[in-house]
Structure formats: structure tokens, C-alpha cells
Amino acid sequence: MLLIVGSVGREQIATHRRLKSFSSVDYDRLLVLLEGVQSIWVTPNVLTETSNLLRIDGSDQSRPYAVALHNLIGRGLEVYVPSDVAAARSEYQYLGLTDASLLEVATPSRPLLTVDRRLFAAGAAIDPSIVVNVVSLFEDRQ
Image 1 (tube, one colour):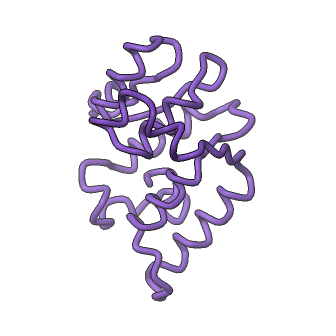
Image 2 (image 1 turned 90 degrees about the horizontal axis):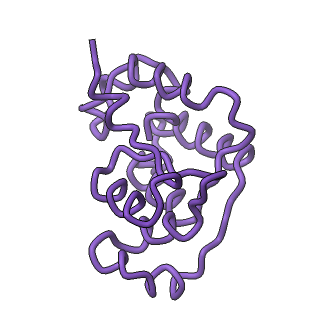
């Protein structure tokens, strides 16, 4: 969400209803974290949730977000995790399908970046090298 909204316009971060706890400084920090990253891996579940949370509904206000998400989809690598595989994970019971699918594809060479404390804790319990706690990056605000 932060990556998409910020790419449309840094000023949009302060006004987007789903990003009230983030700032343009957080967006800058995210960009620094992503420097040198060859590609962003996504799952269909994440893309669907992101699309819904951005309220991409065809209105003029959400159109730039739809374009930015489309551009990310074109540049990213989409990894499909069958729902039955994600739901078979024990973490599915308390994290849900999307987060379970992320844990299925996270590896030390393809770590999961998250601000979700529960998802981070679940990933760290599996292998601390498969998850990056971006929360601390954003909590250290000035």
C-alpha cells in the first residue's frame, strides 16, 4: 500500500485512509530498503487485498492507484501458492490465507518485508532470515 500510494504522490500518503500511521518519511525509508532489489515478489492474494484496500473502483480518485498497481504487477514476479497449500500451514489458523501464502514463499534469498507484528513473529519462528521487521524502520520516526 505504502509503495503504491507513495509512487502516485508522496502527499497522497497523508490523506489515504489506510495509511494514517505512515508518512512520506516512511515511504522514503521503504525506497531505501528496496534499493538494489532486482524484483518484488508478490502473490495473487496480496495483489487482490492491495487492490481492495486501495479502493480501486473505477473512480477518478482511485485511477492513479490502479495504474501504479498495474505497473508494479508488470515489474514484479507473481508467485502462485495454491489456497489448499497455504491453508494447510498451521499459521493459516491465526493469520489467514494471504499471510500463510507469504510464509510459503519466503526464503532467506527472498525475504518477506512486513509491518505486521504477528506475521513477522510467525516468520521469525520459522526462520529469522526469511522475514524483515520493517516496523522498527517506521517506528524510529523523527
